[in-house]
Image 1: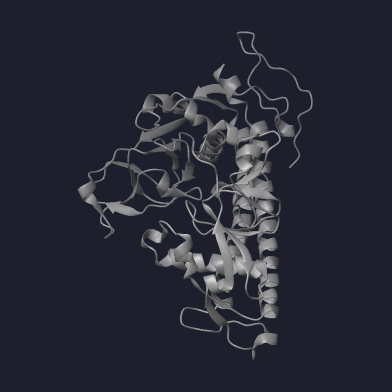
Image 2 (image 1 turned 90 degrees about the vertical axis):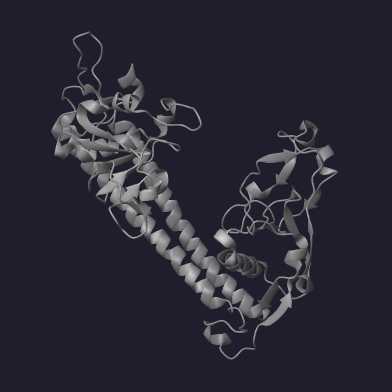
Amino acid sequence: MRMSNKAKAIHMKPDGKPALTPKLRFPEFRDAAGWEEETLSGVATVVMGSSPKSECYNQSQTGLPLLQGNADIKNRLSAPRIFTSEITKECTIGDILLSVRAPVGSVAKSIHHACIGRGIAAVRADQPNSQEFVYQWLLSYESRWGAISQGGTFDAVNSDDLKGVAFAVPSPAEQQKIAKCLSSVDELIAAQARKADTLKTHKKGLMQQLFPREGETKPRLRFPEFQDATEWEEDRLIDIATFRRGSFPQPYGLPEWYDEISGMPFVQVFDVGDSFRLKDKTKSKISKLGAEKSVFIPKGTFIVTLQGSIGRVAITHYDAYIDRTLLIFETFKKSIEKVFFARLIQNLFDIEKEIAPGGIIKTITKESLSDFKVKLPTIDEQQRIADCLTTLDDLIAAHTKKLEALKAHKNGLVQQLFPSPEKIES
């Protein structure tokens, strides 16, 4: 699509102020009139939700699906979890859904005829051909709702503030052009997200096949060169490696323990990222005084989180000091390929989470981890599995990077295809 942000005629309002125009316009609208100032209620019907009685909630599909808040709108679509036999306020298929109670501002499209609770508002453009334009505009406004939400027990946007939000509209033809452009980018983003999710699902299934199940000593899937190899050997973790916890001087938070300018990286649970690596920069740096009371780990150390996000694994790629909420593997008593071992431990924790109440491991100690049983193949088979999963991780990372690039591209388009909210509100 060809667009232009070249110099154009400056249209003026009757009050002598410049008319509202975006930074970027399609060529056929370059010299068109400025956008009209409106409010959300001036271009759309807004229905504020009202919660039914909780005793009317049900799983038997009696009545209508119930949309109550942010948890019921996922991937930009309605995703109800329960039904209600009491019908208060309703949305129809195609309505725009907006979360109006904490967290405020999430936007989705309704694919259900549903009942809406007080955490949701339904928005329906007065002109049917404007629905996609209003949806894209609300997406562009998503990060700004916090500025008008009412603080209390939790943030919320009331009916008057929502309906009175400043809005700007171009001609119907320009609306449709913008909507078509942005929705086509949304389709690309959704397709790319599906590719990344498919690869992640494939990897999860592959992991289940490449590692022996409970009570078995061979995986269900083996590379051809290992079809006739020996069974995997099972040992307690303490018989495979030596490990210890990190440390940090007490009490936490004293300024003398930190040096954000010249201090060394200090690894906490927060700093253990995805893909079995630390984040590129730790949240905090430890001072020389603090380092004397902490534990140093060189680049290439294998670590596991023990609190908070339990069971996150990393192989460090820079020297650092480490907090007591993580476990350090110091030496290995058997032949270990670290990349394979990282995936083995991660897989072990994934299994533990599946059987834990609520899918969450509440806590784990060094002592309880010591008794974890793991199965190991030969070092050659470890290397082969590690190479396979690393290649798949690299592919997932490439698709994820492309997805983020598409999202950034759309954000850039939105910022230029709509007049800035500050200009509309001025």
